[in-house]
Image 1 (tube, rainbow, N blue to C red):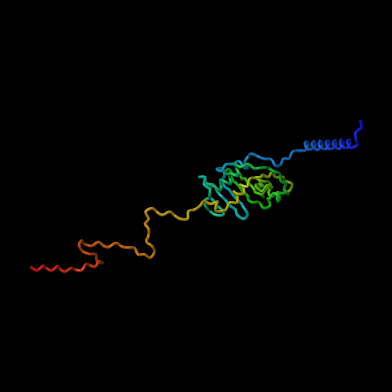
Image 2 (cartoon, rainbow, N blue to C red):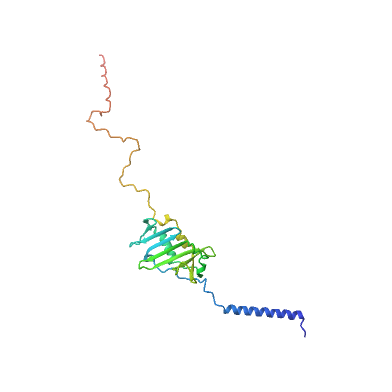
Length: 239
C-alpha cells in the first residue's frame, strides 16, 4: 500500500511539532521556580501600639514626631507642640502591625529608581520602648497603580553595589496614613470657651443700665415725680 507524498509530509510535520512541544515542556519543568511575587500572611512588623515610644513620619520637607506618654496619650513634638489625634496614629500603626503585604518581590540595587525609592513618598521610623528601631521606606506605585513598593529595615541604604532587597507591595492605605494633612494629626481645639454658670448678660453697647428708683416714705411721691395739682372743693348746694 503506497501513501501519497503529501500525506507523508503532513505526518512528518506533525511529528516534528509534537517533538518540539515535548522538548519545551521538559525544559520548563526543569527550570527553577521564581522566588519573586510571593504572598505573605504575616504583618509588616510585629509590635503593639503600646510598645511604641516614638513615631517619626518624614514626607518631603516635613518631619512629624510623636511621643507616647505613660497614660497611652500621644503628644506631637514636631513640627508643632500639640496634643496628637490618637486615631491618626492608630490608623498608621495598624497598617504596619496588622496588615499583611500583598506580595514580596526582589529588587537589585540598580533598580531603586524603577521602584520609586530615589524619591520616596515617606519614611516611617518606629522606636519601641525597649530601644528597637524599625523603618519603612515607601516607594512608588506598583504596576497595578493601587499599591506601593516598600522597603522594610533595608541594609545598607541607599542601595549600592550588588545587594538584593526583598521589597514588599503594600496597600495604598499606608500612603494614605502617611500623607494625611497636618491638621488631622492634631487633636481639635475648641475655639469658643463655654459660658460660666451663673454669668449674667450685659446690656447692649451704648444703652445705659436702668437704675431702680430710691424708696420713698409712705404717702410721699418720689423725688423725680411731679405731685398732682390740688383740686378745689365742690360748692355746697343752696338751701
